[in-house]
Length: 562
Image (cartoon, rainbow, N blue to C red; front, top):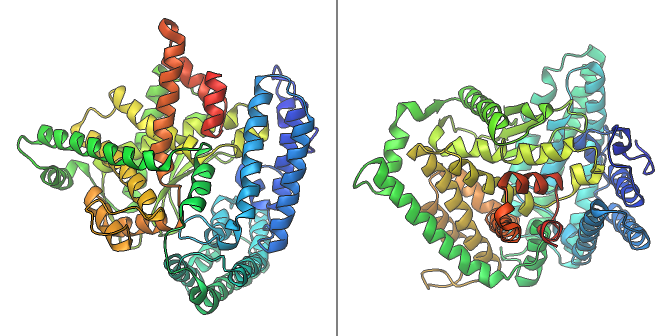
């Protein structure tokens, strides 16, 4: 692993000379990779790739101690330039918030359907190289250590039970089902290792480790069923105080939750009106439902099977990269390659994973297709490819990884928030509309369908977790009303809808960060344009903003406007 006094940036000729603040940030990356070896796998740096972090209370205590030490180092250091000031602002913001979250006990109730250790312990295996015998030897080691990671996680959740800090019953039930799928015969672990091209001895080690991993997930399911479920919270809502903490974490900004809720209602109405206007364009006199029916029935817009879906995604992404790099963006060669893949899980969701530090692992767009879903329509998903690829996440996050000459490893790989990343991706969707890539009414309706969904979940998420009155005035937000509300405001498979609503209920503050992040990105752009006046160039704004790497939205605003 790199020493904190030897930042990766030092190796780039002509790059910015590393500073004391860079050394602190590099040291934090080293510390994080030591505390959580999965981070080394994720960003592609040397580390103990066959191990897991300590998910027990002792592991949390070590993280807290390390965070306090880095905050003290930042306080004692001196900024040399603007890059240092952004690093100080962002790292300080992140660590301060992490300690607040720790004090609030979030780590003891960290269980949900999409982004908790219950998923992360398995998910990191998707990013591990599988080309060589050495790769599979490393995987065998990590699988062998997986039961210990699960045991530490159970210890933490058990402490939460003792202290009365537990997740909602709904999330526990869903994760029980997920865990049982992983532990079943023919489940993920068995499938993962069965075709590994390795010698028989290693194959035996892999099979045993995979079986032990499946057993560990069975143990997790049993613990959740017998101990956590009876102690879990009846209410899905986390309440205003904890929700505000979640919102700050996902945005890197403090917002007025009540004003944002009202804005979300207005934005949802605006998206709906835009969709209805396009429905009229698709066929005069058509309702939105009729226009969607026409698009779904159009053979030219249909895909059958995941192989066809993957090929279509890859071709569309390749065309966007080729055309935009020739006209609207200066895209470095390593970022011109994006892999579009079907995820090995069947849990719903579409996501992006960044390239490794040396680009030996490319940026990847993953589609986790729920079991039984085999048909897809391109009009809904054209904008998704732009969201996950170029000019969305792949350009944004890939550019940060590429920018070794000025950004330390923390800034390139680990800094940032969902509001920054997902807000940019929604901003990028609108940009593609402005550039003429969504002139087809169906594709444009699909973009608005996604934007409408993001507006709807601002309303739903805040409504549920703050106990807001229902929009129809019949009580407060609950599961049945939320599911009905989303069903009326999105046009996707009902399995996806249920997964999405479960996600919002268990991951408070994350879903609104997309649309709220877009709002803040647009506010910053407009303020930047007003300041620059006649000299404003949108390409220059994008270049300056993306060159910062991932940051919280308050850090972004300060860096571009202060």
